[in-house]
Length: 140
Image (cartoon, rainbow, N blue to C red):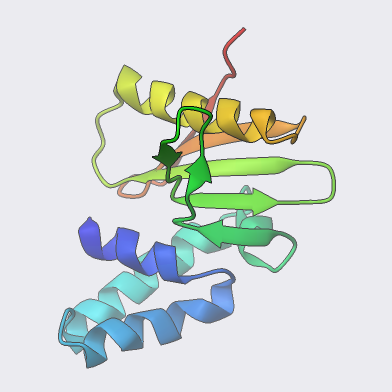
């Protein structure tokens, strides 16, 4: 799960996938056969018709970027995508268990981005093991 997350943090578009995997192999964090398996898994994930525009260059992507909060703290969403009229926040989870705290976490990212002046913010939790994406509803 940690390796998948690290690779996703390194990619902006689908073309970045192989270089990100090769970088981890070069650093000794991933064996070549594992790299091939992960490449296949991630290619399937990011080619999914529901999300392929997230990885085709349509968005300005900020991976693991800190968002300052008014309380002098920072929040660090996994992926923020800035489009023409929208901002999408993604939080990757490697487990299958859905927890309320994950929704709260993404809602807090969405709230902070709205406070930064982005009016149209949506958020998703992406369970990478099952390729399940759950849209997070904003707080009322």
